[in-house]
Length: 337
Image (cartoon, rainbow, N blue to C red; front, top):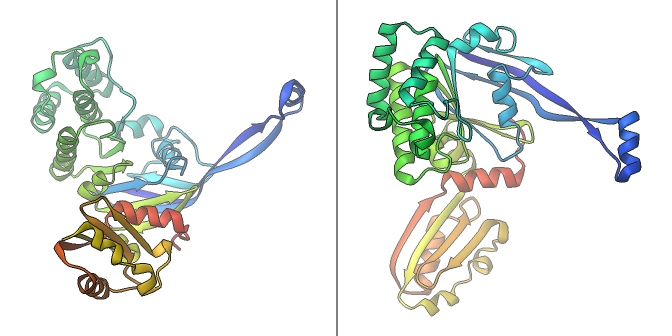
């Protein structure tokens, strides 16, 4: 469905020297610098797959998405989606994709939502019968009925996001690009949006590219993730593979019988662990010990803890995906071959 090969995007940036003299000089004799926003990225996405496309701010995510949607032309490399090259076949291509940007809307601010969809129906050239069936499906999945007669400007953020997703799906696109679809939403609304995306993917086999900073979105929705940093790909695989490859961190949490007893513990000295392999937090009730399982086993950590002090409750958990990803960024993992 989606084939991206050695994709690269460079931008020319004018460098201005400070002061008035620098401004005049840059006007008559500008000095340019080449910025590489995306550097040799390759990946494939199968039909019906939900791909999480993640990375820190400035990693190049938005630039890649803009090339995949046909807004930008690559400096080199190629991308092909459903047999079309986005920036060459723009007019026919856009009829096969849907795009939702979490901080922007494609809806008309002063029109009632129902009227907005009628306008989009004409733009996408959807026939009456297909439109009727489509709206019935979207009403069921996204629960639009309670606010479909309201002007867009009166909708809450959660309602507007559902409305935007519906707008992007009116023409039954084969690929849906979602950029931060749960940004700024409360927990309940986030869960509703996630369930709707899952339902659309399962019922329609729509291929979804999801960019997000909410790692719960990634864990709940994505079959696979591609992670980029500084324009380069640093990981491509499933959540389980990510945890298996980089999830060396474990967390021991316990409630000591006496809080002061926790002072008896010194994991760093006992197991020769440095700051990068050990983090201990005590909130006055519960003690949390995050440690590198490659350097010391869970069995040894538990044995030392229970031998040193009395506890009322104790548990060990695997590293969560957020901690794993932070660790990857911090360690500067080399891109996949």
